[in-house]
Image 1 (cartoon, rainbow, N blue to C red):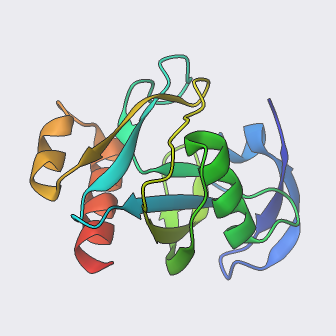
Image 2 (cartoon, one colour; image 1 turned 180 degrees about the horizontal axis):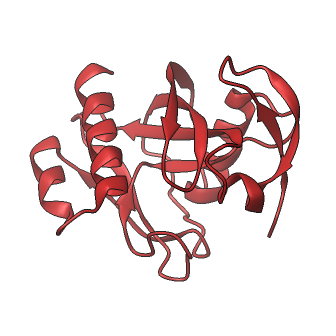
Length: 165
């Protein structure tokens, strides 16, 4: 399903609007996305495995929730929306950082949020998430076999979040 996003410049200023399909296929078009990282009191991260029906990286393990920020939507609102949609619960989120990320097919600002899991019931959205699990930092490295450049960048990003949150 296509959706309308804010088109932004390299200063993250809104300069127009763009369809998600265009934003995800043109590295000259900058848009906004969120990533949510939920940790429990044992410093384990709640990870979601992307649905096998996803077009991009089906079956790959990643952050707790992620997604696009809709046109006119505030990043924190999008973070809570995506967490509720993908994991079925919400919790207090803290903004951690914003990063301009450039890939061969797209460019976006990623707004990163972290939160604490307090035992909420997890009801993940099967269209988005295949399964979930809590992962210790030392288990994280073994999740990926032969990652490509895109995945390597994502893996390093997650490690940085884990180590600096």
